[in-house]
Length: 246
Ligand SMILES: N[C@@H]1[C@@H](O)[C@H](O)[C@@H](COP(=O)(O)O)O[C@@H]1O
Image (tube, rainbow, N blue to C red; front, side):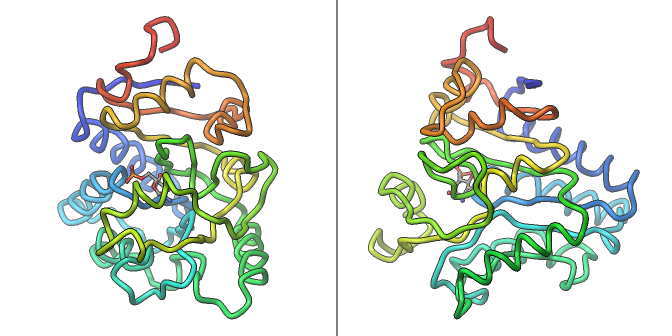
């Protein structure tokens, strides 16, 4: 696992964006795995800025998002569909039909999970997966205890995750109780993984990831089994990690 220590959120975002832009320019039909949350917002800001300044093209790029809330439609401002349009898709030249996000309002959610897996597979898999990390080590919405072999599935959200995400909703009661997420096995199939972490709230999770052992109770530790993972973390996120492990 390669660890890049950066000063702050801004630097983390810039370096991650530069890496993604380089890949997109080098490979015409690149497949990007995308994430939501506060962490990747800055990366999307830099991708948009670069697109406006240099016209880096996304016409042949395909994107696959990690997850979506169950019961929240694509038009709802709390949906991850909305988030992606707002922060990235509306500002670059990617065709809407190239952007894939699981549907949280499908009438048959089990079928939706299988279809989503199939879509990723038919496109030859994800080349680069961008990831944030939950305070309890979740990746996508794979909560502690999820099998490292899991594929796209429906998950009940833990209280801690609902609390952490409550800031985006009018009240905690309105935070959905379930989500649809690609599995840990799906994430591990990506050819390359870029995990970003910024701020003190992530320090414990990052320290556990970098110091720790493989443990299904800590989903991010599954990344230790992958050959091509880069962690870009800022000083605060690395503040509890012993020097030796960086
Ligand atoms: N499903 C998302 C994750 O993909 C994300 O990594 C995590 C951390 O969010 P943030 O980046 O806002 O800290 O939150 C949500 O639960």
